[in-house]
Structure formats: structure tokens, C-alpha cells
Image 1 (cartoon, rainbow, N blue to C red):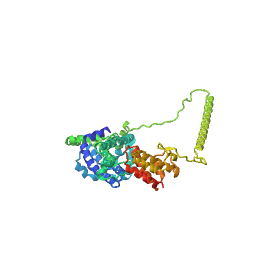
Image 2 (image 1 turned 90 degrees about the vertical axis):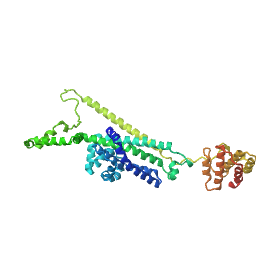
Image 3 (image 1 turned 135 degrees about the horizontal axis):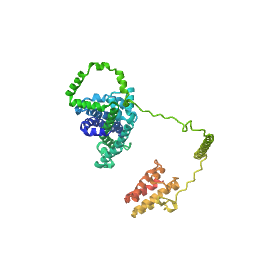
Image 4 (image 1 turned 30 degrees about the vertical axis):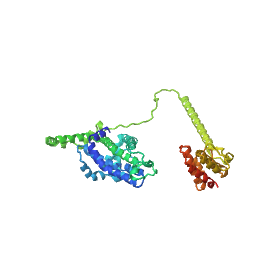
Amino acid sequence: MDLGLTMLQRWWRQVYLPHLLVAVPLMAAAIGIGWYFERAWIALAITWWLKPVYDRVVLHVLSRAVFGELQSTRAVLGAWREWLGTGIVSALLLRRLWIDLDRSFVLPVRQLEGQTGRAGRERRAVLGRRVGGYAAWLTMVTFALEVIVLWTAFGLLTELFLPAKADEGKGILELLFGDTDDGRSVFTFEDALAYALAVLILEPFYVAAGFALYLYRRTLLEGWDIEVALRRIAQRHGVSLVMLVMAALFMVPPAYAQDKDPKAEIAEVLKAKEFGYSKEVKRWEPRVSEKAGDFDTTWLRALAHALSKAGELVLWVGAAALLAYALWWASRMLPRGGAPAPEPYHPPAALFGMELAPEKLPPDVAAAAAALAREGRLREALGLLYRGALSELVHKRGVQLLASHTEGDVLRLSGESSSVFSYLKALINAWQRCAYASQTPQSAEVERLASDYGKAFA
């Protein structure tokens, strides 16, 4: 896998340019589709789903470069049928339906070897026999780098370098293209763009590491290092090598091939230790040999039998105790028949720090509040109107307000369809601005609330 990263560092120009030309338009189309449907998660899903397309471009370049054939970007894009026609439909429709932890490792089997069906499955099983765990851990580590590191980092960069909050709390993309998310998704289009950048940068490293792991496995199985060395020798000394081979062929006596039996030669070669295998076998062996003597072990067997029976009894007793405890616990958890009657409602003496008893209020709350407003005591006037409204709800209209309720609960319990609701909404809004935001209300607003008090609670 380190070899794959080294290859990508050496040939990054030849890899990244066609990779960008293929992946960027697809990612832009994915974000556009998500924007059209007003769902950012659709853009994320399509960007992830199309990873087999990005991978095939990278593998096409690396598979040629490792044998000394550095293709230009025009040649790579011109050979799109060669790398896109290698099972891309099945890769998108079938293998993306489950988590393929060895995707970059088994991709050369389909794209470079052309193995499909049963032969492809057997080939992948043979190649992954010793390095399948490494391929799976490569995928998991790359996923962690992609999601936790790069995606998070690019997301934070968009928050850092772009105006994160602007007009009416909207993000920069909502300001440019309109508010399409509307809070209906946990993902935003900034997240989709950040994830696309993460995949764009990290996916070639993932493919290169998996391809190098594939080369390593083939080297162990088939001696690819010898083939690569012979190719390099042939490229450097092509003419002399051909002449040397021809001379060797003419110098071999004709009877040599006739005296040798191919089957016997193959059998002799297969006797070498390189073609052998090891197999572990486990079986039970007695500790005491048959010649150990006439030592009487009857009492020892009886003791072991007694201990095993005692242990079995302890296990049964423990199981019975656990079953009894489970039944007792279940009986306690079952709902009881006949729930106790709810306690009668007792109006609270005070709510939000305000006394609600009718005797604590003036006979005409609206007139008293209007008088306070004319004197300039606007906060006291609003407080008196609020106290009077709460007392009306609790003592005359039967609204069961509790000390744990909030202003929002007061509005909800008062009934949204009633005339009281609209009055309470205006009154509570004015009171919250005055009490919590220290915004002194206008005298006309307080006098209007005082005049509407009688109409609301008529």
C-alpha cells in the first residue's frame, strides 16, 4: 500500500488531470440534481454512488504507468470504452448495494483481467486469501480520513472563508441561489460540496494503494516481478536479447527435446518445496500412555463425576433463580389495573412571580392599567394587565396553568381559535420585550392593550 502511494506521488499529474476531467462534471451534476429536488443528501448519495466511475480512470492510468506506458490525458479519455465498459453497470447497480470493503483491491480483477461471474469470484477469493484483511482496513481507514478529516476540514473552511451568516441568517449558497433546503435535511449544500472535494482528492490514493496490494499478491502467486524485470531488460537491450535467444536456440542439440519427457519434468519440478503446502491438524491424545503402570484411578474418576454433577446442579439452580427473578421483574413492569385518580387541580397562588388571587387585583383591571400608563408607569401597567389575564384564565375560564408552565404554554392552553389567544399573544410579546429585553413599550401600545382587555375577556 505504501508502494501505491509512492506511485501516485510520482505520476500524480498523469492521474489527477483525467480524474478531475471525469469526476468534476459528475459531481457538479450530482449537486445540481440535489439542488433541483431541494435535498442536499441526494447530492451526497450520488457523489458516493459514482465512485466506481472515478476509480476506473485512476486504475487505467496506473495500470499502464506501472509497465512504463505513461498515457496522455487525451489518450485516457479517448479510451473511455476500455475502462468504462468493464462492468460499470454491475458495479453501480449490484456491488454498491452493499458495503464492499475490498473495492480498490478487487477492481483490477474485473477491469484488467476481465474476470466475471464464478471465475471472477474464485479469482477474488484466491487473491484475497492472505491480504483481504489489509484491503478491508484500507477501505475503513480511507473512509475515516475522507469523512472525519477531509470532509470536516473542507466544511470548516467554507465556514471560515465564506460569509457563514448574512441576510436574515442565511448561508452564502442560499443567498446566491435561493433557500432550497428550508431546514428539511441535516445536510446542507456546503456539506455536499465539501464531501465532493474530499472524494476528489482522496479517491486516487485509495485506488493506488489497493492496486499496489493487488500487484503484491500477484507477485507472490505468479512471479510478476520476474515478468516486469524481463520487460525492462527487453526495452533496454531488445536487439541483443533477441539475438542471444536465437543463438541459444540454435546451439541446443535437437535430441535434447526428444530425450526429455515433459510429464516427468513437470513432476520433478512439482517436487520442489516451493510447490508444497502446510496443513494444521488437531486431535485428542491421552496424557497417560498405556505403559503408565497399574495405578488405580477409580476414585479419581468418581470424584470428577461427583464434581461434574454438583456443577450441573449449581447451574440448574442458578438458571431457576434467574428465571424467577425475570418473572418477578416482569410482574413489576406490567401495568397495574385501575390507575389512581388524578389529584384535583388547585390554582397556583402565583405564576411567573405574579400573584393571581382575584382579591389582590383592582376591581377594574383595564381602567387601573390605563391610569398607570397615563402616569408614565408603563412597566407596572403591563404587569397589571398580565396578572389580570392570568387570573382570568385560571380562576374564571378553568385553564389549568401550573408553576412549571411557560409563556408559550399559556398561549397553547388558552386556545388558538379564541379571541383571548390573539390578545394574549400581543400582551405576552410586549411583556417579554419589556421584562427580558429591557425595551420600554410605547404609551400608545400599553393604552391600546388596556382598552382591548375588556373586549378580550368579555
